[in-house]
Amino acid sequence: MLTNIDGNAPVTCSKSLLINATPAQVWAVLTAINQWPDWQSGIKQARLNGPLQAGSTFVWQTGGATIRSTLHTVEPYSQLGWTGKTMGLYAIHNWHLEAVGDQTQVAVEESMAGLLATVFKKTFNKTLANGMQHWLAQLKQACEQ
Image (cartoon, rainbow, N blue to C red; front, side, top):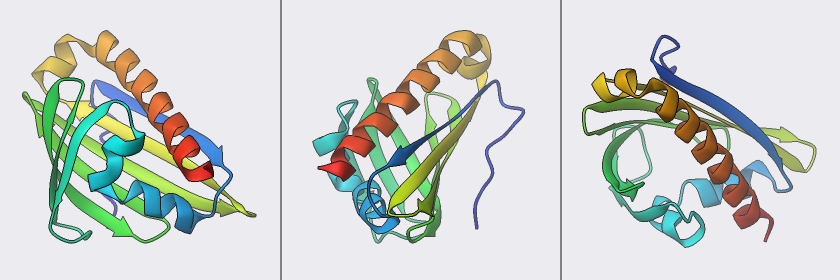
């Protein structure tokens, strides 16, 4: 079941993009967590601990931080979501895939709470928005190759 982002968190963002690939193709790239560093330049390492299912954990490095995440939603070709913790921050991150003809509308959303998110709200919101746009662009490139 999808865990909604925290609309009251100090840091929130949502973005979407149309990708010239089927939901199955986008899903295959997005859910191959161990391969994220192959196409996502901001991710240095990613390791899924166990099967791709709700409750499984993964550890990844981005922006100089190591993030410990737990999958909360795995609905093939439709929804993928996780929670993550690092340096006193708590994030909820969700992906939504929807077929539009032979293409896929990909939407991503995230909320971040915690002391650092509150103190650096303006900077974190800008960084998150830029990061999401970058992630979507690189996902599009990886899926359309």
